[in-house]
Image 1 (cartoon, rainbow, N blue to C red):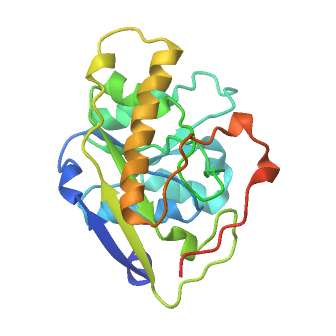
Image 2 (image 1 turned 90 degrees about the vertical axis):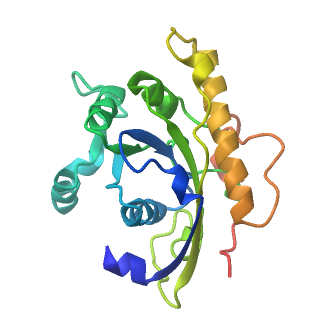
Length: 230
């Protein structure tokens, strides 16, 4: 990790909100294929070993497979083809060991034209509720100056500025201890996305859209170009 620390200037707000011990779920925004490295570095520097819920297909890449296994990352089969696949159960097992699990609630890189968080998926909420642990919202900004959304090349020099912030645990008390409908899970997930968006607004210029981007209602071709932050 030293190379990732050296190539960026990190500013982290409200780091005390990340639990120092015990299990938790942390939910960052996602707009660059590089930002998982940034999130991992930040948690590592705060004394927590990062455990990502990552798509199972990554375990088929020869070199990467060994890294993922040795660092204890959690595979998620998004296709549902693996018998006995239980992403929430796998994450809960890591939490039961006292580990923090990183879940990207958007499920993929945001498609919102200006890189604001889009509509979230319910996995992070379901995991936090099942495991009975706090869900900590997180926002980070600056990865797009190293690798733009859908980009493949790196721009490491000069050193880039990375900003991040953690929020108070999302209040999920109204949803605990009972069977939830899909509508209720989406309602709880929107609370998470609002918390992430609020933190992101503190870190960057601009105002988030009044209506959250829903990829199911937009065409991929509508994505506008985004100029990296200077």
